[in-house]
Amino acid sequence: MKSPKKGFTLIELLVVIAIIGVLASIVFVNVNSARKKAKDVALKGNLSQMMVAAEQTYDTSNSYSVVCTAGASFAAYTAATAQANGGTVSCVNSAAAWCACGRENVSTTKYFCVDSTGGKTETTITCATDCESTTPDYACDGV
Image (cartoon, rainbow, N blue to C red):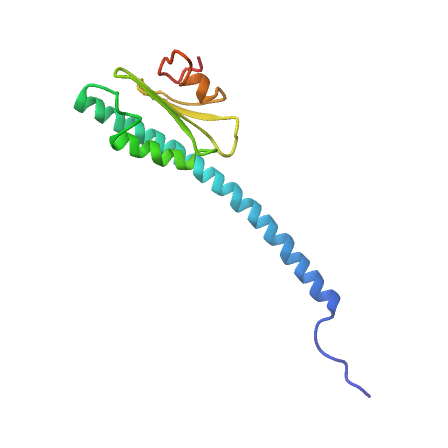
């Protein structure tokens, strides 16, 4: 009498491979979502840091004229640009005021805006409308 062969059948192996594939896809979706949330946190942090650096610039030179182009505020602006959805952060400035805004990653219809008044706002108003209108008011006020 022959002894039965020990091992797995082809069906058993295929079922295990299918289960592993389903679990891997679930993990991948969750990791991707966490990555987008992390980019949003980094965007908000960098824009907030830009606000601090801009105030230091103003204390030194009594002007916001270089906030979007040079110094520590520009370094924070550049870092925020790397985290924003679409890779762009809007920044406008004058000697008396400035405003910066970037699109978030998790909800692509939300924007995070900081300005020289100390405002930090999450809004659905686009950066082009809030910071960069034809006559900018340099404020995150949704106008």
